[in-house]
Image (cartoon, rainbow, N blue to C red):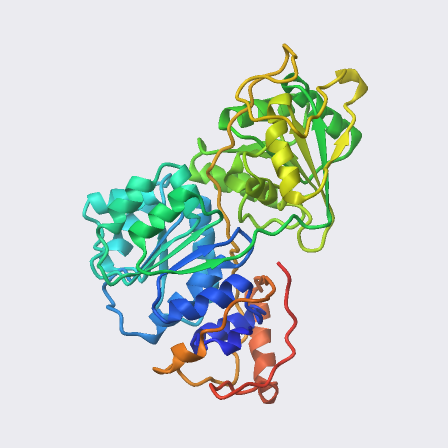
Length: 490
């Protein structure tokens, strides 16, 4: 389905046209019509499927159409981490480019006093859209800084991560402040029983949309070393001696291990930086900026960056610890081989990790290549794909250490920003018959991404747009004529 075939309003479609967004992804095709009809929605989809746009676009379209109080917080979007809240806010700026009356504020901890004062002013005056982490929003609620009694939309993004991080009580406390007629949307990458219970508590007769978890990109060369815990640093040292690696993410299950590995790599004169939850927001932003701009070659991180971070040129992902479930593995290694590039993913598998890694191989329906350990490290344990789950040691080596539990704090998002050309050709506004025409089920689609032009590029693009008015078609409910825009693959 094309976005032009939905009942999103003209201003939203103008922004999508500028961003080269033509085709809905499956999750967008299924969710947008239902949200526009006022239904509660429970979406199950992993990061990278376009779920941010699946809820932002229809909600922004509704807010822009009017009928909502100017002095109220009309939409609350909950995200598990500061990074995801920032990326949702960034996406919001792009989609709402032609919506001057619909603004947003991102609310999260770890800020200085000036940022807090800005949050306070926006919340008290009634920001149309508030994107927040649960703890921070609840703190503002307890201090009487905001009123949710007239809120019309409530979104939980990555609900499974919020529950894993212990935000269940915070979510319910926030939900208790919402009016009964508030429309609610909940997205989760997985659907364990606790998510179903939360959905029953929050949602009213929801439409359930489930998109199958995709496999990793074919361009990712997946490999593994089967080793003992004390051999891991030796393997990392070997990898950097063998190649001039400059765009690498090393994922660890615990923040203490991130700090240890970062120190060890620093002693090897490797240009690295650590990313974990003990850093302040300013420190996190600085690490991410330095890594994105190439000032840092290697980032050692917890799963806080496994989802939604849009960096296209990662050459290697190393799983220092085996993730606890296949979805986390897919998200981690999905940081490489993006934008049609090649990439490599190496996982360090101890004897304690064999059961988890075998589960990943069964999910992928393939045996991942096992590499021989460097000669200087000696022998490792023999890989057993039939290993049983165990909390202790297997394989009989006194050197085998305990592995860390995978951290559950990460985000995703397809954050996009844009400036661009104003589109010629207006579509008819939505009317009371819009819901009947917007009930198609999701079948196929492609994920798209937008670039961020400079101001000069924007001006030139607008001039060029005005010279080509005749090439655009007029949209209407009665039918459409296709244009030849090329999709940009995310």
